[in-house]
Length: 267
Ligand SMILES: Nc1ncnc2c1ncn2[C@@H]1O[C@H](COP(=O)(O)OP(=O)(O)O)[C@@H](O)[C@H]1O
Ligand SMILES: Cc1ncc(COP(=O)(O)O)c(N)n1
Image (cartoon, rainbow, N blue to C red):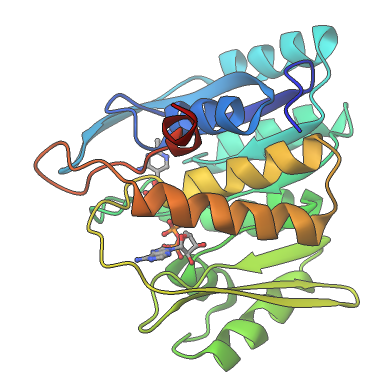
């Protein structure tokens, strides 16, 4: 059900190697079939091997980008990724509030796969105070959920408890992603009267650069296209699984997932 007239917006950092951040988000929006727009919060110098440098953009240019997008093209879903500093988070929250954005997906990005911190430690508080409560859905991985809740997460049961704790912080839904735990790749969706488990076999692939960015952008695209929350997550779980299965063995480190694998199949 592609509809390139349905607009989606990502507010995130740039990854010059194209596997994560803004670049992954725009590829995903296009692959799922929505019209993608981007507000850049920071520029990272990174590749498959690591993050080497980060420059945050000013609060003013971030605010202005959001305003000119919303004043002209109202997005049907907004995804937030890397937001790095307390000031940037506050500016984004205050600016978005004016527009009451539909289908806000907050991916609380904290660390790159290579172990580089993309969120300053002092910014965690504002993420919890301002961004998480505004979200239609929050999509933490296990280390992020541990940081947000302060609890250790080792089992599926822990994921459920942590998910419930995050739900109590105010978002409408929480998708706890279990890719960092041992065993199969199990994600849990929690909401008021919603409890769904999405399970897939763990794929033995090293190239998982951008998985978090990709699944959250896929959820945003599906919500924008009018799918319900359970279906949006179910379809996105299939999408990310196939994107990992068909990931690219390029670069010398953790390579990117294949956002357009579906198009290969059409050839
Ligand atoms: N090796 C894997 N095989 C299959 N699915 C995976 C694998 N690693 C991660 N996933 C899935 O990819 C998505 C993102 O996972 P996760 O690694 O938990 O988050 P992040 O990319 O934010 O660190 C989730 O749906 C997770 O279940
Ligand atoms: C700019 C930017 N944003 C986010 C990530 C996280 O990527 P991943 O999806 O691999 O956790 C990243 N590496 N770079």
